[in-house]
Length: 194
Image 1 (tube, helix red, strand yellow):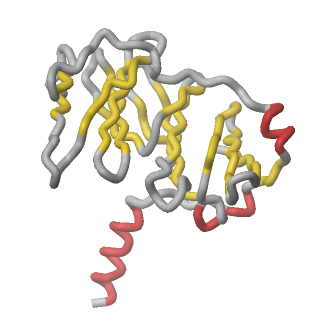
Image 2: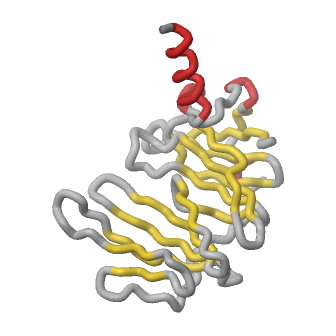
């Protein structure tokens, strides 16, 4: 019985987020956070794709997003926009409790579900878990290639007592984080991303 439990535990824990050594997170001040800040690209460029009635159909693919406006399964989809090059399309889905984000490559029809709204930093995408949870603490970092993305890292900072991320950015291999623990009080951190 113990062997079966160990096997099941290993299988389920391998699919969870990577852990972060809390000692590798460096607390910095506000000026260091702002000094290293870099601009990012997003998916807010207007798309030619339009929602028709309650459906979004991605051209030249089999991908379709259908709103379900029933009370028990409610979800409504919206087109957020495209990247600057027009290769990627961002769709959001909203139910009663949270938002979902889907990144679609328009050329190949690849679809990826993201944990939060993405920001593009050169060849990387950073997503922060939405605030609909008990606080934004999970971060995803994706590698961006021409027609696909691959998850580089997904991790939680809750065990490091960083659980309400207000802002973040990626500068080379350093992730900078602004964590708010009260309305007017913030702590700032940086973490090396391998």
